[in-house]
Length: 342
Image 1 (tube, rainbow, N blue to C red):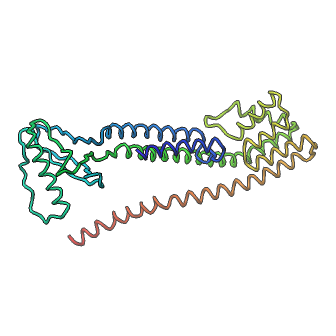
Image 2 (cartoon, rainbow, N blue to C red; image 1 turned 90 degrees about the vertical axis):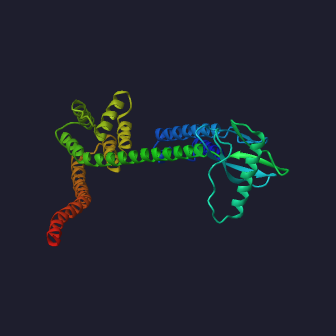
Image 3 (tube, rainbow, N blue to C red; image 1 turned 90 degrees about the horizontal axis):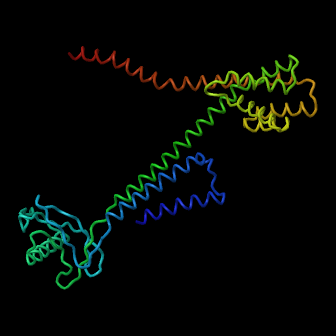
């Protein structure tokens, strides 16, 4: 039972530490991941506790235990017995079937230990006790033996604790899976933002060179994206469209640009938003030249990133190439060896 209490305490302590601000949920995959972890762990613990309570409802009986005989024949059960309150020891009791009052199996002659002799004496005493009662339906475990008090208990059922432990392990596995998925999503988002940045800045520079103001160029790019919105979506253009919605709702242009950079989260986009804000505040005359230079630098960065991704892909292909080489070598060598030994 103690394992169930410990699990409840750990779950409550985790929630309490989050409430006081000592644990950040972002580290564990966010609120949904933590909720799923707590749901699986607590529900599994409750189910395990129910199994434990059902299996250990009446563990001990000071008057002895009454076991029902089965018509299918003799069977064994394992109990724990304490003599005069001393330490418990494990004992296997043979319960005869309804048709036979005594066990028919003869024990094999082996080198007996002190524990074996003690259990044999205990088994003989139990058989004598049951012969005196002469009950054809039940087999009894006596409450006394030679004036010494016996306290019987069944072996503790650990299936509930095992179920609770498995549920805790499953909850951790689910949480780690959700955390891993979120990390992979963040990596894909960062890569997509990096790939979209050069084209976005280059298009913005072309619109500025064509005579558009910064605000009109920004809105045109967002409107073009909304007209041909892809199914997967592009994070950079989604942030740009959100900034236009904010400007339509009354937020100042400067604040909308700042939020655009913060929403993207990457330093390049923050630099781009800073250029837009400086253009509003200081009226930069060379805005188109600055954006063109920024776009060229972004293209160079994208080329470097593409080379890195290509090298990573080549490295990942090494494993299947080695496996294919092993298959080809096997196809060539095995017939050669067979023909040689044949």
